[in-house]
Structure formats: structure tokens, C-alpha cells
Image (cartoon, rainbow, N blue to C red):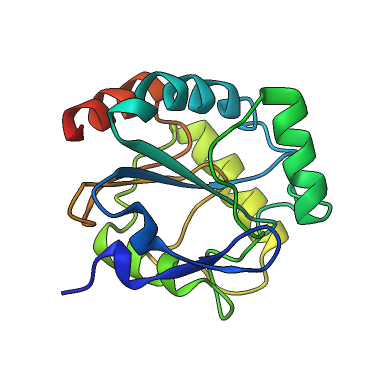
Length: 182
């Protein structure tokens, strides 16, 4: 059975990083964007990271430009924005796809472990999100695809996916789940 430790990511400079580096840690893997309505979540994520890092939390930030091209710029520009505006200190990786033909193998696995359960958005917001998604994506959406920026996967200390949180889930709820794994 696969675990998160079977995968690699490229850091913002393009160097391969084995996720085995994080063995024994609780991970929160997040696809992010700098120009999204959910971008202010960076502030709460950083606060969570600062308060729980010593207990074993690592947040892995994977910028993604697939949803409305809301992560413009180079990897370095994205990093500069996040550190200047939100003071982020958690690891940030290379901008990558999380859906479709070029999606990261990590995301193929994450989505197979915890698919989209629906019900993440209020009815009115769901229609808006669906319309936005269809306007910016030419590939058909699969059932378990990432729906938008700031979807989060919680990984336990054994490298197993224990939860998926859609972008609208309150970060207090996410933090409670993280703390339960620590």
C-alpha cells in the first residue's frame, strides 16, 4: 500500500524533494494561489504552522494556476508574495497541476485516497464555483478532482491520508483535525 513517502515534489528551484523527508510528521498538503478569494487562508495556515510545528506539523504549499489562473508569476514571485504579505515559513514547492493530464502523481494518489465528497459549498456558491471551474478548465472534471484552490489533505504520522478539506471548510475545523493527529 502506498504512503505519502512514496512521492517526490520539486521545490521552487526545481530540485527533487522526497516526501520521506517528512516521515513521522503530520502533514497538511494544500494547493494554493496568490490571487484567489481564499488566499487570506495563508494567514490562518501560518498561525497554525507556528503554533503546531514543534508538535510535528508540516504544511506543504503547492501553488497551482489551474483555477482561474490565480497563481500568476514565477515560483520565486509567488514565494516573495507569500512571505511578504503573510509571513509564510512553511515549505513551498514548485507551481504544479493538481488535475488533468499533467497532475502531480502525488495528487493522483491523494484524490484516490480521499475523493471529493460533495457538499462542500452552499448551494449558491456551488453554482458559482461550477461556472468558474468550467470557464477556466478545458479538460472534463473527474469525480474526485480538486474543485478549487486551497483544498487540503491531512496526512497522519504513518503517511496515510486521513481527511480532505474543501476550501470553504473553516480552518478551525481543520486545525482540530490536525491536533487530533498530533
